[in-house]
Image 1 (cartoon, helix red, strand yellow):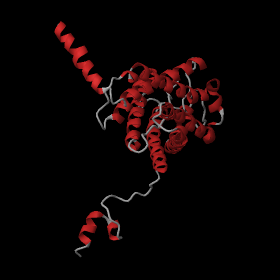
Image 2: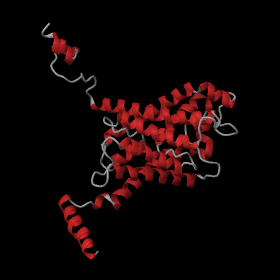
Image 3: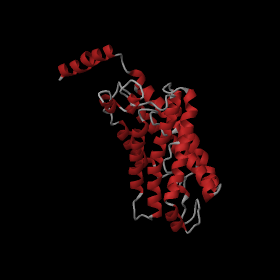
Image 4: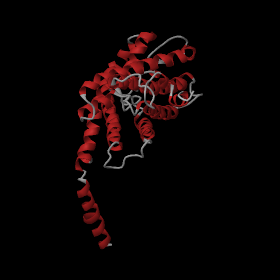
Length: 301
């Protein structure tokens, strides 16, 4: 009985002769843990995000407006980041992963794992939301699943350009939106600048995504994420919408696949070129801030 008391406090594993006070690690392979975390974080983000779009579309404005989609996707990014942030970094975005590789923050051999996890999470979330809103979608469109027309529903899952938008303008739109995303992400992660308080990063990144949606979303739905767009597009192609999802918008599908990769590298590169590369050494920074800048200004005043 005397031996069972500490065992009960520590856990069942102690009864089996295992020493230690920490829970058992079921998966020790780092790549496996990263892949699982990235899949789940992406799934959470996409399920909440796509769910908000489905609710607005099928509710015909009775259960939200465009602003609610912006808010929901921002909160969805925050929740997804909390789910997997400490394990995989919760990129949830192929453009983010690609940019991290370009700038040496992620090894290239890990890129396929991140991309596959993001594609899987996005695809599964698309299927989940379609199942949950199946009756609502069919009630809204009368069972006619279309990409364009009076009651299109493919836009619940993937992004499509506004009727007035050309491919060139749409490409620039996606490059710029993703550039702003990565520029700000690089700033938020720069420990020599003004990083957010520890633990608040997911919320700040979520607010950033919401800001992009509220300012740069009307042209084409601010995909700014190749894996977020292509996986749901494939899902809709096989779920009843057909391959019109690839032909619509003058074959728009490749724009949110390619442009964000370029935009992400450009945005991160701009931040590094204008800010990060010019951080002085800590000792030099103290000298500059203490003597060359602040003190002379005080004396002049």
